[in-house]
Image (tube, rainbow, N blue to C red; front, side, top):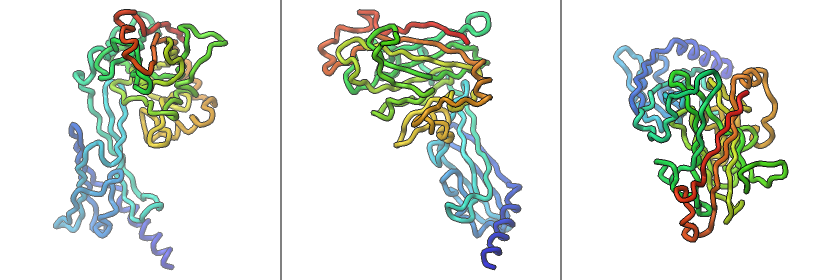
Length: 344
């Protein structure tokens, strides 16, 4: 009898909260949410959440209604950040959970704040620009080794073992038609050309899984634009002391659809995470097995995408970089990216 009464109470609460009075004010780096609820919800003041955050303030109004206020930064409450074109999208959800976990919330409400990415936040050399070759499908790609500060192209191709190599890739695009760029596969090799018998060291594979993030601290950096990506790669012993070339297969398409075949995944805090939407980390589960199965929708997107093979190098990984300090990009013209468009 007690259990059935509890079910009835929950059903009544779910019905009452179905027409919420919610106001959202988005600021530059924070959000303010006001949620007014009926008197019967006042005893449940501690069961209202924004993400995993409780109300900043709670008050009972003269009408007997309750008012929950949430004032939080976007780095609080498990907000997710997604970059789409030149806009940053912060997402979360309000929830009413009258019973503790693992009981589910009986009401959720999406919260979203969209901000335009400030141009000054994008280093000039990283701006993909707006020039597109005439015709359909003709694109201009770039892949470069950046300096440690991520402020420009690196002046040296000598990398100390264990340090990081920021590898930047971008595609030029029209500003009104955002493109998405991903690293589908990357390997290190000792030659500028890949051959069937070439010895390679896998870096990214399985359709966008950063394999090197399982072995060390490599990761994809947060995007500044959907048409560019930075692989923050920790140097490795493969080819140490000799010339190393990074070969990548880049893919780009007009759209923001992601699936197991179109993704950028890396290991963070011991689990695979999707760069562009951490809440959808399940797309990365196949990184431990195989991401080959295709859906019909993925096959449709395949016809709209372009593939591009790029080579960056030579890069020289050493224990003591001082011993090879003269081997610099400026002196040797090394670590240049080779560009070739393979349209499909």
